[in-house]
Amino acid sequence: MKLTAPRRGASIAPCTLVLASTALLFACSSGSDEDPLDITQLTATQALLPSSTVVVSAERIAFLADEETTAVDGTDFNGDGDTLDAIPVAVDSRTGEEVALNVAARDLAWVGEELFVVTDEADDEADWDADGDTDDRVLLHWSPTAELSFVATLATGGARQILAVDDDLLFLARAEALAGPRESSLGVVHHDSPTVVRDVLTTDTLGELSPELLGADEGLVFLALDELGEGRDLNGDGDADDGRVLALLDGTGDVAVGYVFHLRNTELALPSSPATPLRASATGDHDWLVGFLVDEADQGGTNLNDPLLFTVAWQPDQCVGEEDADADDEVLFFLDFAAWDADPMGSPAANTGLVGSRRIAIVGDFLATVSPEADEGTCSLNDDGDPDDDVLRWVRASTPVAPPTSAADLLAVAAIPGGSWGVAELEGRLVVTVDEAADGRNHDDEEDVDRDLVAWLSPSAGGPFVFDHEPGSGEVYATATWMGEQHDRERLGVAFGEEPSGDINEDGDSSDSVPTFARFEDSPQELLFPGFAVAVDHDNAGIEVQNGWAFYRVSEAEDSTDWNGDGDTFDSLLWRTQLSSGLTHVLSVLNTEDAPAVVTQDRDGADVSVWLVNEAQAGDANGDGRADGYALRYFAW
Image (tube, rainbow, N blue to C red; front, side, top):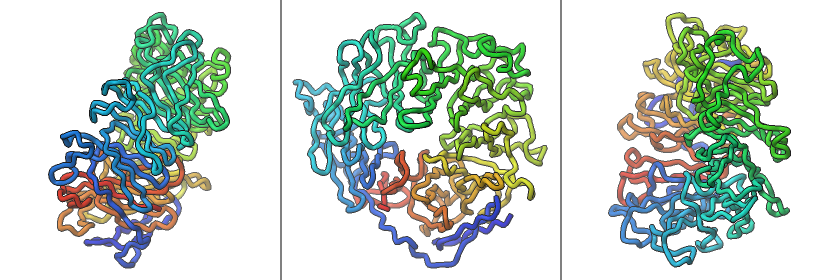
């Protein structure tokens, strides 16, 4: 394997990446120090906090500017006498035009070119809903052709009150539920009529519902129902104190043709944690394979992973006599949305019996999750003699459920950073990081060294896990320190560890990670790691792919090079690499926040790339007279 590092110095020439077989080949061409694409970068004039909301729709950007860190003495945008608020700013990335909306805000969402703003009236002492007080949380609308105006009064419970889906629709949790069966507090707005709120109905014939918006995946909306708020039992377990009963809603309807939105209760209780994983994989128009975890305690104190609920072949042999006997676990369920929505009795949600945590992945008609052995009684799923590992489990979405049970198929997962928790979907396969130390098994050639190794599995082919990424022509093993799934799941961002490959970036050590953008080669079937020989922030690489370019966070300290020529090696920089040619260059000072390198949209194609610049490293990037905040920088494609 030939690995050539880029030229070192105060600036970097455009560099070319070469792929051969499954090897990592990095080469740097000669060339000018000018930007080969002549990108025009613009910077918004207002400062923002690293935790600020930033949303993108086509060519438009909106973010919450921070009054306190904008200008030397702060800026009171909304004229309320303080500089403590967050103010919406809309930006046209083509012209650079900025519009500060001068109202204190909590959240933002684009629907097409329509911007929606969540604000508390008390923050501005403005009675937006004209009810005689300033105590409400309200939804406002703005567009380039319309002034800020009132849309609806919102609920105050839950983590979010609005949710944009598919660039066309905005769902909102209203303050008051419409009374009576089949009614709900949920409303929906279409971009063609952005101030008209349509009702979202339910299938509940007993009374109204006030759901909490949890999120959306590939157009399916996840909701939570609170039994305490509704005052009744919604999951049939005999009590009315469960806080998160799952409901689902098809969020892909077209209101222009009179589509009537309705939500349906699954009658299954989710875990209480807001971070519980939810996954929906589209299988056709208005249809999804849906995976979620059910909380045993809130589902009537039921032991959902009792082997007696399943066929004899369901239980791993090494777990016989070690069965789980409590009702304290979280267990993976699945359903086929269209069939279930049409006939929930005839096509109910199915219990896999697999305990889960952190992550649900779906490839084809298989679901996977990370199973804590501690939730499986006293069983060591991977048969390493201890019951304290997190093990990958997967199963076909069919009944009776029949998950793989051989210890050879049950490997301990390393929960590395990047949002995937060590389990990712890539081109119909599962890619995982396996913790050799926890697994108690050697998966590479070195018995005395434990690593976090990258392996992959095709569930439809039945395995086995593949660790050698150059089968038939030598052995190539990959370690990962960060792994991030991309929206289209055609590339996988992997911070590829130098150990055991050696000093890839030629900085004198072998402790770095370099950015790679993994994909599969089908003939022969191999997992490839094309990338570039520069050190990323090893546990915060932030790799994102837009329009055939990979963006990532380079650490000067880890790369031992002053790439921006400012006399130190303390900076975090935004780099990008073209996937087709390997052309690579430095874009900007970035930040060290635990976040993607650039802001992305949940769709294919990008019209604008957006990132945050840490002024402590870049200086006064937005020209407001101070250099202790964060600036928003962008370019239009």
